[in-house]
Image 1 (cartoon, helix red, strand yellow):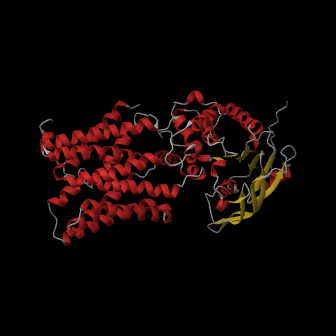
Image 2 (cartoon, rainbow over the protein chains, first blue to last red):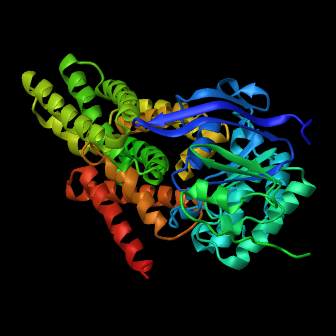
Image 3 (cartoon, rainbow over the protein chains, first blue to last red):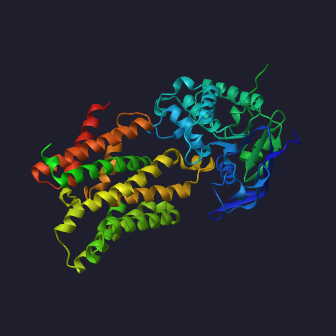
Length: 253
Length: 265
């Protein structure tokens, strides 16, 4: 796996905001086809890290390369599908059907004067099918349950046919059964479609065993492990600054 | 109805009114969804400075209004990125600042007269052939731009940051949207007036949102409400000699209240 090209390569990333250190000398590499999770306490800089990666925050020290290209010169943003944390708290009165939301994923792909073509339609249908929201296409997003809305947001990201999917705390406000279904879908996207997935969460209890690597971030990268052997109690204590007892979410197959 | 359409000025007013209703409601819907409603109000007041300059310099008040509204739209967008925590304050500064400037220019020129009054509150009687031509030219350009970029504008309204990370040039498109809105506002002040154009941009969309439809349907409903109220407003304005802008806004308000009542839960 290490010989695959790097999707993200971050070296010595430091970031300060209002005289406060948010990130300090963080380095990590994510390879194509990986399924990894970033965990860490609230305020530990996970979201800021992703925002820096995506160019939503600036003025950091260090180097970020996306698909081998310096981030400042990076153009192929459609290779990256991003579902932010607040996607789940979206205004329920916003006039948008599921179909209209999923189609947004195609907007940046289209040239100025071109109309929606067959390619667009197929990509939108595929994305809706994969996330199992085709039957909801004419529903308003405000009418959906938390789990359904979450799948629509991911379908929106998938419709641009990205190579990487970044999900920031995707389970906020989603019930347990929807969560399990959601993990199954993510696993399928990773194994079948070879989609690189990066998943951010502060809730260590929900991390599934199928994740390949686990990064723990609190200002800097603390550990980078195979999750099955990761996170000894001492590491968790270091991460969260408290005595931690680990609850593993084991699936016995 | 037939009888009033025999007058040239009424024909002109109807053509201009329908174009403006469509443009204002469609571009306004993006402003409402982006919580930019106050921007329309502010740009309308800036346009008044252009009108004042046009009146005293003897040039076309509408063209001057287009120019000044565009300049302030760009200045506001630029300043918002500096004061992003207080961006609504930037709007307040421009709103009262430009009104003050317009009043001073006009009073220095001793031109506080009925002509200015018609720009404040709208007057169908004052719509000239030249105005209709300006509205048709700029209006078509604005409509083409809206058509080309409405998907991007919609995505940005839905989630600006996700739109940016998917490769949409958000900053550039924000400038484009406020520019289109600035032009539409400047064109509309003949019929609706600077003090009332904000209502024509905002209320049709807010009324349409009550019907809880997708975006395509919402925008069509908004345009329909806008056309309906502009036509009804001009009719009533003609029959009862009322200022057209105020009458049009009262008609939109009636549609809004009916929409509220029908869709109450």
